[in-house]
Length: 321
Image (cartoon, rainbow, N blue to C red):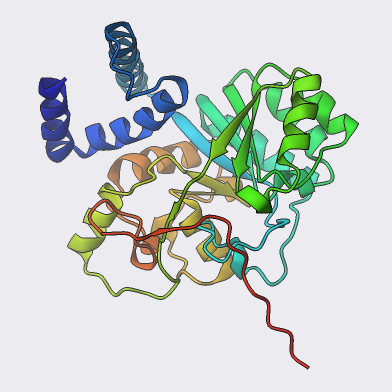
């Protein structure tokens, strides 16, 4: 294993493509296998699957196919919580909104025209169960043979209605329950109702968050921004919001809020481009981008000593009298 780690570290330093491919694959593998399990069979299975996915990616690259391991599909910026340290910057929305179902379908269809395959599509908010037509949307998404699996991320504060529960029974879907302790007030009830309806779910128990810092510019130089980008702690959080593909929600939400400067080189406007041009730009964006502006408004890097903070602490809203 030490030999493999040394080889991985060497290749990550020498090849941007290898580093990004590894960063996109490893978190997906961790969803399926416990990387800390030292049993030989588990280790061998993990290594074989990594090799298989790497081989698939190389073949797809050679044949011009465009696929990605994971993408977050934002359907709403509304949330039942107001976490003051939300990494997706939702606490800064003064007028959060649902994206209408017609727009969501249009953006999804365009995404499917551009990408040949997405291994995991995460339907996310905000709190996705706040969208009144989520059942219609996830049924629509699950019909596509270009989507391997669908994940719904919820904070355990809402119980979905019957139509939504019926839609969640699709075998492609797994519900991810983020456990924020006392703030996830309906977590146990939600677990029970999902079990009763034979809906797959996974509880993410969060002991701490990393503090990504404020939304002010750090005024970093180009080389420092490249280092921050290449050593991001959460490289698997590509975000698709309002037809725009960003590397992360810090970028998509930051631009949407006006907190991060909007530069054409920092995203691909899939929703506004012809399919052929969108594919061309996506391939270039995924392989050539060295950093984005959002990296100057974020500290989420292995190069930085981030503080661990308690998850889910609610933002205090000041009321003027």
